[in-house]
Each structure stands twice: as C-alpha cells, then as structure tokens.
Image: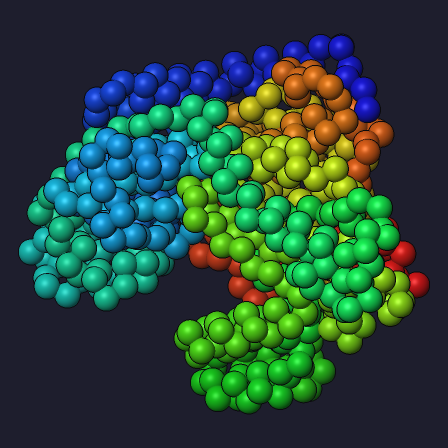
Length: 589
C-alpha cells in the first residue's frame, strides 16, 4: 500500500466549490446543534432550500415535492406527525441524565432507517444516534419533512372542502398537486390513518425544535465498543469450543492444539442472504413453500412466477425464488414462524446478535465447521466436506451501517481480532449510469469524509457473479463516491462527479476504507490524498447493487424497496462473497 503525495486537488477543490451551498448548510446545523438549547428547524429552511438538493429539488417552490416527502416519511416514525420537540443523543443514559426517562417511553420505528426512537409526552420524541453521519442524515430529513408538511398544509387550506371526508389519491393529486401515483404511495405509507393524518396536516402547521445531547467522537467510539462486546464474547466462546462444531473440533480448541484464533471474515451486507445460501433452511422446506405460494391469489407476482417456473418461461433462479418466498412464509406465521426460523438456523451454528445500543446494526456469527455440504447453496460449487468440517474460520456478518459508523465498526473489529483475513462490503448505491438492480463493482472510491481517493485491487469482478445474475447487469471497473448524506448533494454536484466518471453514489465504502487503511499503516487514515491499496494484509472486496437513480429524484429508493426481481443482484453478490471465503479456506474444489 502506498500514499500518493501528488495532489488530487482537481477532484477535491472542484467538488467543494460545486457544493458550497451544501457545505454551508452542513456547517449551519452543526454549529447550531452545539448549543445547549433548542433550535427551530425553520432556521435551517433557507440554507436547505438554497442547497437545491437533488433529492428535494422543489424545496424552494410552492409546488409539492412528494418524492422528498415520501423519502422522509419512510425514514421517520409515524409519531413525528405533530411533534414539537426532537432530542438527539448518543445513549439512553445521556437522555435520562437530561431528565428524559426514556425507559418509560414507548419505542417507535421507521420503515427504512434503523434508529431507536422514543415517544414522550408533550409532543416530544427522542432518538439515539450512532455516528456523525446520523446527524447529516436525520437533520435534512426532518427539515424536508417539515417543509413539505407545511406546503401541503397551505394547499389543503384552499381545497379541504372539495376533498371531502374521504380523500382519494386521484382527488388529492388534482386539487393539491403531485402525481396520483405519489399520493397512492403516501396513502400506503400512512395506512389506515391516512384520512386522520391528512386532517392533522390541514389543521396544524409544523414547527419542530431540535436539540443535541453530546455528539463526541469518544461517545460514538464507546457506544461502538458496547455494540461489539457481545459479538467478541461469542467469538471467544467458539474458540473455546463451547459455541459450535463437532466434538473433534471442540476438543482441538479446548486442548489448545490449534494456534491462536480461527480466521475471521468480516462481511457487511444484510441479515438474510448469507444465512439463506449457507444454511439451506428455505430449500429444506421447498414443498411447504410451494403450497404457500399456491394458496396466494392467482394474480400475486409469486403465484405467477411459480407458473412460469413450471412452464420453463422464467429467467429467475429457483433458489432465489425459495429464499424470497420463505421470508413471507415465516413472517405470515408471526412469532411462531420467527422462532422456527431462528431454531433452524441455530442448528447450523448461526448465532444472531441483536443490538441494544444506538448502533442499530444486527450481527450474525457463522462458523464454517457447523455447516454441511447439503446446507450450502449448490451454486457455490463443489465443496470438500472434510475441509469444511475442519475449518476454524468464522464469518461475522452485519446489517450494513450508515456512513461513519462503518469506520467505527471495522476499526473496533480490527482492534479485537488479529485473525481478520477478509473484509467484504455489499451495500446499496445510487447509480448515475446504470439501472435499478444492476451490480456495480468499483476500483476507485472517493470519500467525502476524508476527501481521500482510494485505488483498490477489488477481490471481485463481473466474472465472479455474472452466472448468477439473471435480471440485472454487472459493471466492474467503476468509480464510487461516498457522500455524507442522501440530501447533501445537488445536480451540479452530481454532474461534476459524473464528468469525472464517478457513477456510483453511496455512503459506506469510504469510511470502511479509512478503517482498512489503519489495518496496514501506523498512521491514522489520510486526509485529501490518493491511496493505492495494491498490497493489503487482508482480502478486500466491495460490491454495490443499484437501488435508485438520483436523476429521477430517487423515487425508487424513496418510495419502495427492491422487488423479487431486484433481489437477484443481492444473491448473486452474496454468492460471490461466500464463494470467495470458501475458496480462500481451501473448501471449494
């Protein structure tokens, strides 16, 4: 690995010049949040509008921007409607010390952002933040929500009588603005309470005050250590031989005949794909899953896809179909289904560890020696059963974190795990040149946090997943830019990166690479430099799948998740990651 001392000022300086308004906005809320008192969100609205965010392009217009509103709605809890105070903190202890006894407040969730929210009295909400990236993500989301709420409030004032007591999406679009499709999505997002929520918007304008408790780097590091502690405990138990594996493997560990810890592979992806392809829990229930699909309405996409499989008219993979159906089948059976799934995966040694801290990132420990040849997805290749049973390697798979939390996590993993052999990142990204569902493999990453540019020897190429990618397209040798927030970017900003051939826009790769740098170098990660990752002490691979296109105002990301067809890219990528690990362990023939 080497650091190029030659300047990369063209990229850095021009990028900063084009994002002056973004920088002003970020500095405005960062300085205001240092105050011990409350800040009115409306103070931030002028700089938010001036930023001309690509995600909120109509912020400075009287027209409704339902794309931005839908994005905010999906990332905030329902209780944000009508809220007057939002208190942000790093831990429940910090909130309690400030007089907010959140232990007695109901918890709340948002559909598309993993944060721990608490709903208190007097229209007060409290939320725990995992890193500075949560501030960059949450504050603009709140501002966008308030701006669009108040726009709808003004529009409703002149059209409430015409809408009547049971407003429909088509009538809302005609009388208030926006598309019928967006109003229908908002109807689905608000659910059965849509009419009451719209009445609340009509009757009340929104004026939220925000306050920050703490926010130090030390606090985030302390919280990350608390998050990692139970995972490290599980790894220690496995090394002692009392966590998994057969008697021979346990005896080898207990006798100390093996030197040191077993190899550790760190994966940041999601909580379903690796487990599905490693354990075979879904494939073992094939007949039950087929019966479940047959019981669905005939116009259901899964019922139609089953018919296409039977007629040989689909391009999809049967294993992916079963994985997708299994999730719905287990969820349809409530807690019984969840318990059955946990027990089935535990039989293959998989340990699920949920977070109790502000870092809402679930983790899984997957010991290779607890798996079997029959449990592994057959698309992985021919497996050496003896080598699999003898392996002492473990996979720590986490639900991908947000922004700077990625740096904190990998740094903590590296500090405690000298046996780290590989780091693999699978995440979502916006694409400027491809389509939703395509797989993007980058060889260059520019990180806006450190303003450094990393040249990678990426462990993956299109050849590693092309055979398993049925509906999307694989693109390697791409360039990615790690942004600070989905809102903190505008059209000029995106155009600049596009002209410089940076076509992948995401939020985690840069912080992960900053941590990787510290694995191999005695210095802290560099700022504003070019880094060549030609030689590293670990195996490194980064894959993204395209989840939205910013030039279409992020409708895909803001309004709906990837469909059955979209998940094809996730499984093709996960197969490539697990295949890589098995190959490095000498398990694939």
